[in-house]
View 1 (tube, rainbow, N blue to C red):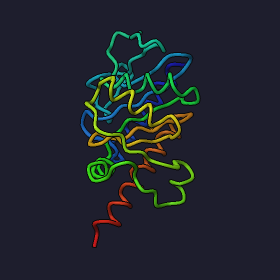
View 2 (tube, helix red, strand yellow):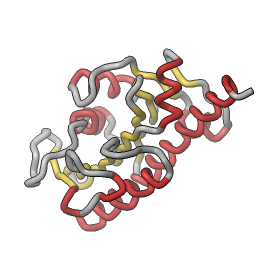
View 3 (cartoon, helix red, strand yellow):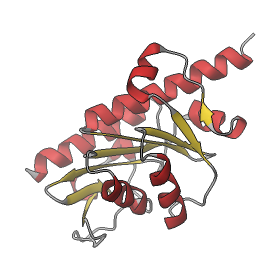
View 4 (cartoon, rainbow, N blue to C red):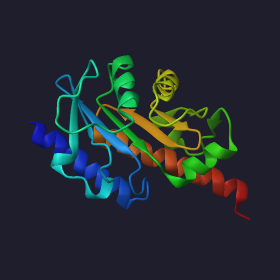
Length: 187
């Protein structure tokens, strides 16, 4: 079964890169399956991710695999602990969402009915250093009641019951940010 879980991580990691939702070493995805967190390894590249670059942790934060999980493992860990309904998490670095986070405070305005239905609200989390417990706790607090958040000058986090659902929510966040940006600055 872990083969299928890892296959999903590879598929959506590559898709995130192909669709411009992340670049270079940025971003990470995870799946919670049978009380184990499967997550991209530290230093792995999304569009070139292999089975051997998927780390495994337990729900106590203990590393179970020989390879180290992403430096953002705390982000995934705390969200899974807080939200029992979440089975997959995407942390990506889409350009319009990051640009919007540098210009807005509070939340990203939602423009489309689809984003309203599936996301309801997209809070913008104030800047905290990447990979820190402080960032993980702050994002988790903002995701208590919502399925997407933008981290100021860093990227986005989306959650769902499957990696497919989580991925498409990430696309909706970036579409929302792009539409907001174009409506404000494209003349």
